[in-house]
Length: 392
Image 1 (spheres, rainbow, N blue to C red):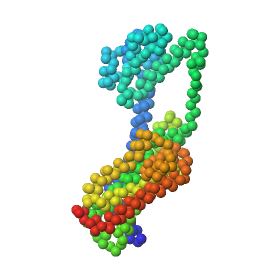
Image 2: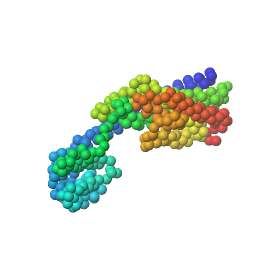
Image 3: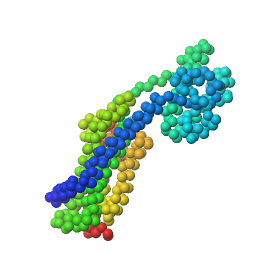
Image 4: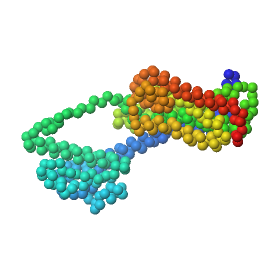
């Protein structure tokens, strides 16, 4: 094992001297990802708050057909604008986010006590219109409810008679469990950090040394090649783990600064939770280091290795996208799927829920087995003589 530790010390010293390697491995993830996360949260919160507080100005077509409705809307602070000639066109061209249209049938339906139609013209594909549309629909629903209650009173009917079922929300969420709503991107960020943290090192220690012709002198030493490969792999894994630890530390420091106090969300992460997340994600660093080392050993040049790494970055994205697009309830069998199980467990940790010990054991064990299998394949490549020939 002396050869393994010697290779490790060599690679660590060389990469620490390389400022580019240190920057890519230890600084890009821990600094860039939290900054992007903060900027995204601040921008989203500020934009949502601005839309909610700004004066609601809505053009109304046929306002003269519903004077009582217009008075109600104006009393609630809505500014009724002049009706456009072609309401669909002004919404489609984004001149207006939403337009109300009161059809000709409204007055007759109103006099008969029947549901009077009101059209809300908007484009759901424009996300910036969500807030004003929601505000308009809330006002219309409130008005309709008030008029319905008054009509029942006039007919001598108790309004509660129309409420066959009374729905009461029993909110079991806590400020801690709601944190996952704001931190849904955290598992993906950690997954991508596990891969990018050691990516430069994996390419440089194999494909890079091929091109520099420094790999051949290393391999002719009287040391088993698997030890040389393991030394490089462990170094790659250590850099990935260091990047993960720094990223988690950065998030712990910046999350309390997020503008989420008004939403009742607690984003503080205890040290125990950080260590548990690091334990869950550690096997991914081993898996990533093995895969990166394997691809770097297979590549004939540094440029070819870079092309492979661009595709590798997509791998941790797949389970995160599945989880965000289709949230599912964690189950035991899911813990055997690498990357996917880590996404689920990190979500449970952030929410503060206690997951069974067997879940952690199965997730860590299955990921380790696949990572070690990839490392064994990489070791076979190191035993091939043509490894040192970058052009072969």
